[in-house]
Image (cartoon, helix red, strand yellow):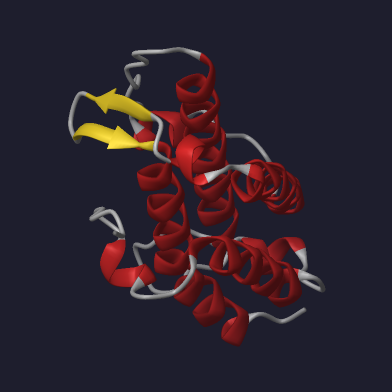
Length: 162
């Protein structure tokens, strides 16, 4: 049974491992020829720039990858929530740096998730806001989260000059 996550509506019936692979590849292709100015474009006024979106995606890869690894290695693990806005306030990476971080972290997490057995995916952990979850819940959330942001990157790519 598929876990119900805050991003289930974005993932739908798609397989999460394939979705993570496809989404990262899509973002890499869309941004491959971008200039520094392209990374500073937003999908619409008041929205995050591409640089900020990519940094946010990298942050989520850091946090969710850590959560999965901690759960797999620490019985009774309890998630430490993070404030994504506070993390963004401290982010100084350039557009290309944020892109490279996202793509590298995504590949690393994808390799981990793809290697897990059904039993490992069922590893439980606790989240102060979400309650009792599993590593599979993290996987599905991560995949849906990426899908939720790819449309913004596609909109920005439509405006890019690179």
